[in-house]
Image (cartoon, rainbow, N blue to C red):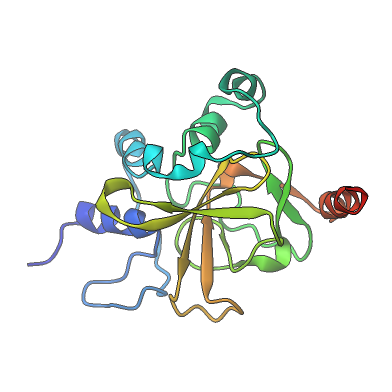
Length: 205
């Protein structure tokens, strides 16, 4: 029996992979985005968040702002995703199809540099995809939410939720990894000054 469109959509969001055509098992086949009704978006976003199943909330990070302090500097959607581990709807983020030749993606919460423009690639999954991060910028945690095991990625400086990382999908990248990141979790600088600043601070330490 063929799965109904809603089950195909739910499966794609669980794995954050492109939706394959019926009968195809190739996870890298890019497809035209499946439109979602506006009424479904809040449901899907809350259903596929990481929530408390990840142990990242119990970790200690250099930036130790309280929830109230984060609310003062983040908008509601940024707080929901970065601090409450939410997920933006697929194909909705401003950096999904953003492919600059140079520059740095930084944490939208604390401005720490996370990814270089050269790390980004087109995966067709509906979220920004990176095959690697700036060394030490991203921390990984096991996420057992919803009865499945995934690897959550957070900002190493503030613990802000970025998304999840997937391995072994066969993408032609140097690492065969896909950091699937929420656009809301990111800002972008067309220059590499954030990286230079971070490296300068490390050399002084």
